[in-house]
Length: 78
Image 1 (cartoon, one colour):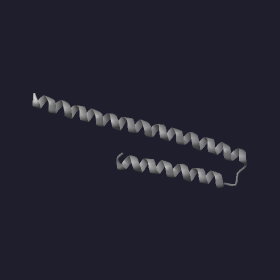
Image 2 (spheres, rainbow, N blue to C red; image 1 turned 60 degrees about the vertical axis):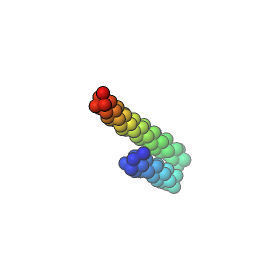
Image 3 (spheres, rainbow, N blue to C red; image 1 turned 180 degrees about the horizontal axis):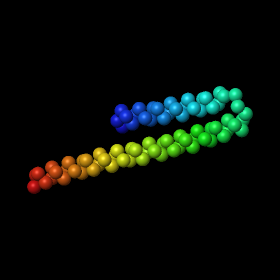
């Protein structure tokens, strides 16, 4: 995992923890707090899905690069 990925994961975890604490410590009614928790959970799920897509794209780029390098090396040895 490269440093950008670690930074993004750290940011997402920090945002989730901060958001959860902010919601739980806010002086709202229980129904309002539950609604906010559901919304934040949905937002976090969307963020994680986007992060997963980004990771998949990066892995595919690396795999394509390795395949290209392997092909060039193979051709030069033939």
